[in-house]
Length: 209
Image 1 (cartoon, rainbow, N blue to C red):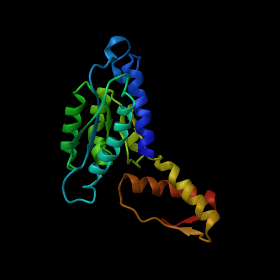
Image 2: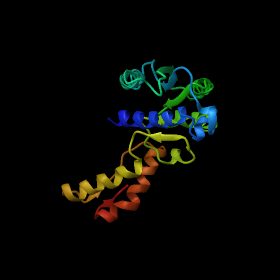
Image 3: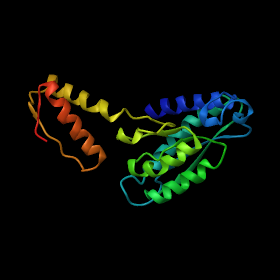
Image 4: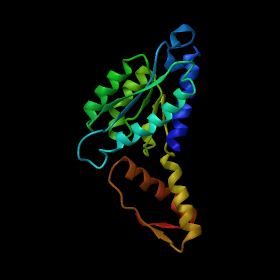
């Protein structure tokens, strides 16, 4: 459902831009934003390998295709059919940056989906900002990476919204008084440690680290 809502919102932006509206990612107002031919949605994800994420690209591809087929069945965007194109980043940051750059060089690509893992997105973000194409991240918890990501939005709730919800449940739904954290020593883990340190006492809980 989050993906459906995110895709619908992004396609609405594309619809406005296809009509020549002065949206920044369409290159300004006037005729520069008018689309002739298919409107492409580009998905960058992992489609190969043996990692736990290897099936993620195919799952997203199938979900996006269902939504795109529904849009096309209603006449597409201002009469233009929506087309899904994909690229396998192989969980390689260098390759991710390369395929994102290549996809965004195609002016008919009006929406990018992914790359959603933090390390991969970080290398791709400069190209997204340069192309000024909206980018939907289907899985991105790290709030700090969204700083400066002017053309990027998430289908996932911000990480800073998760900790208060969890602490509220622990406070009112359990007898627990002390909480701790087991996490990787990365941006996400450090961010949650900082949030728990700051907020646990507000919910009557002791954070032991």
